[in-house]
Image (tube, rainbow, N blue to C red; front, side, top):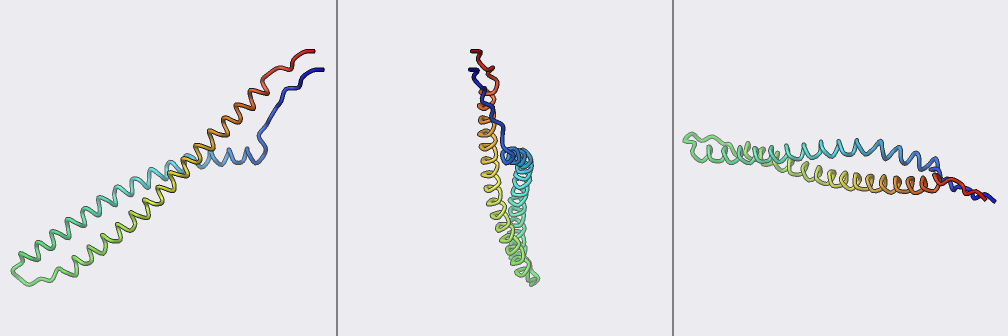
Length: 129
């Protein structure tokens, strides 16, 4: 009696999942890079707002003519608060993207290992009686 080689092929669901993983991984990585870039520019913007607010306060203190810059300082501080809020949202989104990317990589490695393991079974020639 001849031994049959075990051939395991990925099911339709596995093939679709693998395709989706391969499709999403570059998009997730690119989005992560863009979020990181935006976060860096948000930090830079916050620093500029802080220095501008400090400069306006200093000008207001040294001004001989009564010029009320307080509303502008308050607007700048409000803008800074919004920048910090957006930065926090981006940070949370980037962390979710990082976890998603990690899970995609882990799932891809798991599926690749499964396929390589199943390939090892199918490449063995049947033994002769």
